[in-house]
Image (tube, rainbow over all chains, first blue to last red; front, side, top):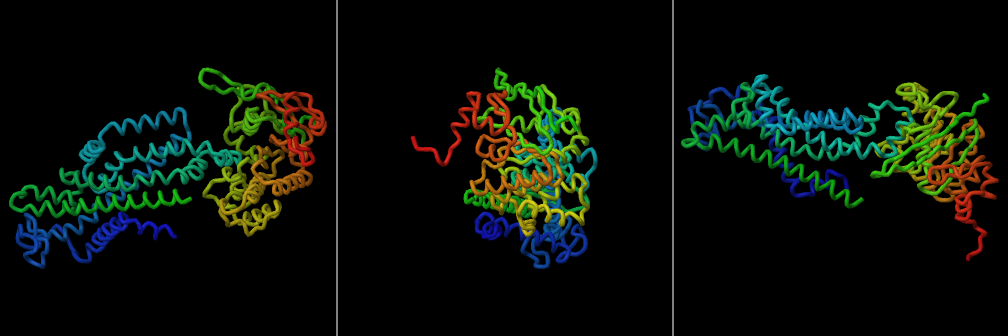
Length: 276
Length: 260
């Protein structure tokens, strides 16, 4: 059976894929259904949901279309989540591989740096970074990746430490291969699977961190974000709670979808391992 | 051309085990001439594989000298060492573990040709096909993954990788121990052919005196990291002098031996 079919037989995976596909569709179709600026005023302020079908989810304090904001916010959440996780995995894999392969002083140096990053709460690190450099999408991605690369680095190092003792690495040395080529072409690809298994956790955490930064007003001010929407709605929480609840639900569903899909991947690979 | 191809003198490697320091290899000296096969025999734990790894500079010795092709091999480092590795190759015991699990046959043979600049990118597929034929395999095997081919084929690919850079010495670390008997015979015949045609010297490590008597000119018998005895392979196997040599000969099964 091919891996995709086996993956889709896991119930968690199916649920996760459905949620993520819906999210992806929202992100991709945002400018199709809601062309123009989602932050433009579209109707009367504080219109409740399901009252006016041209504005199905109502409007916020300034009369902006909540559904349009939700669609455009999906873009930001997905983009930041995936970009930050990818950056964290790449940085972590490279640093972990170098530390594990080089050993000695380089290993000490890199791993103590990792320790230093790990002892600072990653959210505080992101907060400090964004408030110093200034909020923009790229900075937010960098800020989140800055706190998330330590996990992949540790896992990659542990894998590399066991792989570098294997005969095929000795074979590559006998062949006369450059140490960097051995590290990144021979060892790293074999060390990746357990590192990639972390990706769902990191993507979910990155989406939440981005929302939290936006909630505190440190998101990119030119983009709609779910965290920013929740913060907007907070001022009118008693009179118009839906303004916070709707993006909140979107956030919960997204993180749930990422976790479920990740769980599905773990389940599929576990099944394959027990079979072989 | 009076100095031997490889000469090893006073080679010593110690490992710490807890507070005790154990000498895995203790003051071992031997030499190999061009086109000659020297066998290292001994029970497990006698330091055979450690010697292989020391000679190939996969592990650094604590003391001793290694001269290879007239050069102090231990003084080399970095790029100089990597370029000399073309002349000194190795074939491992487990032919599956010796290759990157993600590799194909073609990539395994491409690496030495590329690293040592032996053939251009366009030329390499042809060279790979020629290497496969040289070790008795069909060139159609090139695109196959290493785990898809049989153990005997894998060991032939390992030999092809070793001869790709035209070495003057190949170290075999228990290279035929994991193969079944009929395949073992074919591989030994291939090695004898290669040696006769290319004048490659072999350092052949094995615990199996039957295999050693088939391939080696001289033999060194090791015990607990030191040399117990050495000499002409036939002479040593026919009349071992040391206790460990006698034990190894007695342990070698023979077809015509009567059951006790």
